[in-house]
Image (cartoon, rainbow, N blue to C red; front, side, top):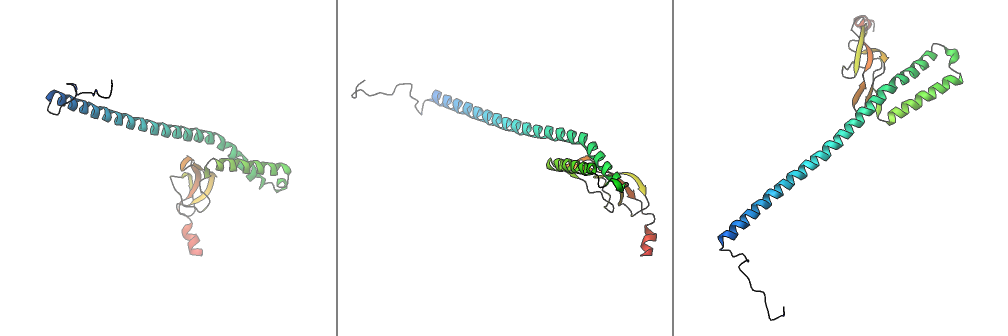
Length: 181
């Protein structure tokens, strides 16, 4: 083709007054909109799938961690009981073995804390909270306050792993103690 020849429009070029071609344009436009809507739905579904997958993985990680911590808490309980028994036998307090057990207990506790595990506050005088404490007995003492801790409780990232087992005061003997003050 040389410069003097120019391309002339043929019948294939759409004319605005051509009804058949206008219908074809409307049909293609409608199909484009349907395809665009389907694409947007597919993208939304894919993003939802990604979000659900992340949430499922996070939940699986939390459950695995919870199970792992639950399996190790009895070991920490035993270490704590061993150290508590030293107070009943003061002659053992200065033994290197006892110091070693203390170091193991501290290291074990710090590893759990590093993983997000925290002890539930359950000392004597703390208000009883049924969401964090499990009352195993009632005894004379300040009403609805922890009188003794039987077993420590723990939370992992605000999820209760094990509630603290406590003895709760029933309010008996409280009136006499108040009258004496």
